[in-house]
Image 1 (cartoon, rainbow, N blue to C red):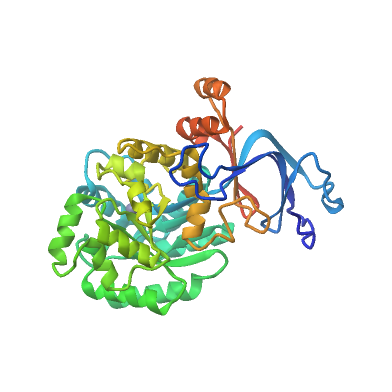
Image 2: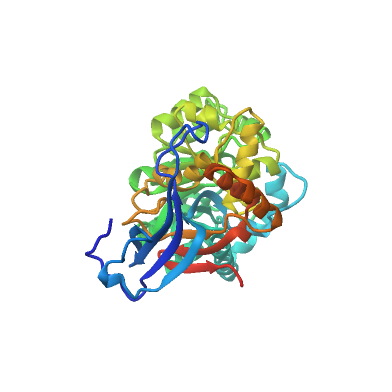
Length: 445
Ligand SMILES: [Zn+2]
């Protein structure tokens, strides 16, 4: 369908390639049994005004006003919606791939010392720049991001993402205990900082504020109550935190909050769980917790690479979805070892395989695109290659290198090809990334 009311502007362009997106949730059905992909071989994607204007078979003639608009020829390549990473830490690029610890030691040994440097505005701005470029160079065009406790670290991300027209959800981290000096805020100042960021950034362009609790052990009851008030009084803000990642962490929370029924209950009592809440991990939850998440429409950001690297545990995706809990996919860098959502998907496959489940390429792709968009309430903006949605797109080679090309040549179905891409591919397969119709990454050479 072409919205002819929007004529091509000066930035208009057309991409030609094989358009692949997942419109429906395939669930845990076999590749050829559940909802399949929408696969449009050799199509044109018409872009103008930062949005997708039309998707047409290349064999059809272009509308008259689009004739003469440059066509980028990517025949044989995949054109996908940009990936949505629902949980990732900007400052932790500084500590990605750090050896030898589990969660609580890892925070104290590597993460907190690195995060202290972000008090310096120059470090925050350079870090935001490096981080967003890194997301784009891995095919991620939208993200839910943790900065640090410093207001300037959130400010830097908002500013840089807004300059690029990127969809970004973030907010100053709340943390007023159990962290070193230089990483602690106080309740009143933190509230003022959050209110100022909400006022200036929430709903501006594609920026959205998230009430960002590091995790329950790092906030006092007073601070958690303040965070709950922010969520209640500012409709439309997101909320992000961690929950039940590691067993020692769960035991510690039980000691710190003896009145709470469970770790998740600490958040529930302060009104920190709602449809716009994103909780990373959720490995060690019980049936009652899953029922709470379902009732509130809150999502778990499953972070498989991080869970494997830090030895946190095996998230049972099927169990969560059977209980009605929304699940998205996240890199969780720097606990995670790659910003690549392809790597994240194949780590998710392995975690489910260890539990006797099979994650299809369709389910993985759906979750990293339209599924996340739906769970974040952004379905009319991102997640599909559809007229009217933002032109957040990625272009991929299915196979790079001799082994992958050989494997691809032997594949007998689309799922087999795409699954091999998901398993063998990484950022080398990415040809280019567009954010709001602008090229933000192009593969060298
Ligand atoms: Zn995290």
